[in-house]
Length: 596
Image 1 (tube, rainbow, N blue to C red):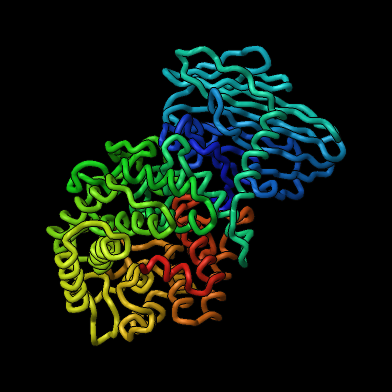
Image 2: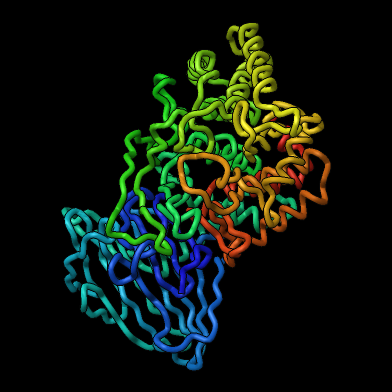
């Protein structure tokens, strides 16, 4: 049976993450960071060959249900069978001395036979470890990598794996703790599973209690915020786009990318989502990460960075992994790091401007950085780039990129006018108008009554839905109304918005992909701004229904095959969900806030 991306749930300790299949198998886990090599990589291959940890009933399961415990990242999976019922509690404790994955089996009814098989394969499935028994478990070692498994269940070693079979009775509890550590260092102290469970539940529950959002769709908003927290690399404040690599945007296709890095493009979306939900500390940590990443020469700024701010992210392919649903190549790293994407300068300027609007006092060092960014934009805004979608078919004058260059200048003007920050105000005002005029002259197709993907192009692109959201034109402007209508007519397929028509738009790759979910949320925001409340809520609720059973969204969705596509869970999708919910709750207040 072909796997489905929505069959997985996320675990996180806010430094790395694991994906657990609904049948109880951990199929993806990178220790010790999001972007480290995976020790369980069967998500992109085979369970025995490329690393997995199965924990399930050793009998026919008649029903499986799962849910996160309250407002936490603790996953509970209930297995029903003829012999009784057992519950599996999966979580990753907030990072202490080492990184841990804890799995607890609880007997709830009858006597349920259970089995587990732990088969790590380090280096994305390339290295079979040396397995040795130890007190209460086993250790797994290959090169610099090591894992220790501890349990109160007797563990045996066979066939390059650690295995156990036992019976759990009603009221009994059996725990497994897997700990990562460098093989050349001492084995970390043991973790008590029940104590770790209490501390993990307290950590997530207290974090969730800080949320100030009390509007409609709160459960979906809270789950999205928890997911964003789970995708945060706590030591630096950076947020990864997704915890996975090479999950396909088309089954069997080549649009498979590594998203375990932090993109500058997410800056304003992230900041507004966190600030508007009451998470000031996280917003400040993200802004701090952003400032450090952008420090230096603006000409050397990258589109994405490692979670700690690292610059070198080479892209390569892994030949021994067959890929999810045979989708190849399997890519690690991301060559988009070398692209020129003009829009990120607008995102950074907008993010720092929104910080001031949220009450963060102006900072002299930050303003100096913004002045440097403005000098770069003034001399590069008229250059072609690879754009928001990171195309691999050559640079163009993308409309969204030009709009975001306008945003950069507009926010500099707003900083000078609204906060008394120094700068060549008249020069910036003139530049802002020049960019605005250029976009309206070259990106708008009067015949079709819509803004196009790029200058003098006949292709539509959903990124132009951001035009009223960032304040380039009001939602009531006839050109915006016409653009929304054109997108509804040509890019709205089966109730969802395509980024663009990949069959007719050259992007350097074979045609075919799902609907990019963030684009549909942008249409929700446009409806809200235009006063089309019924349309906005109908589309928003349709998008919510695409979440899997534990409230998670991937990057894309295939409405005809009714399945999620792309890396999972996707921060951009959950950011867009939060911001759209806030827009709906306050009508268009939050969108107007970004517009400046």
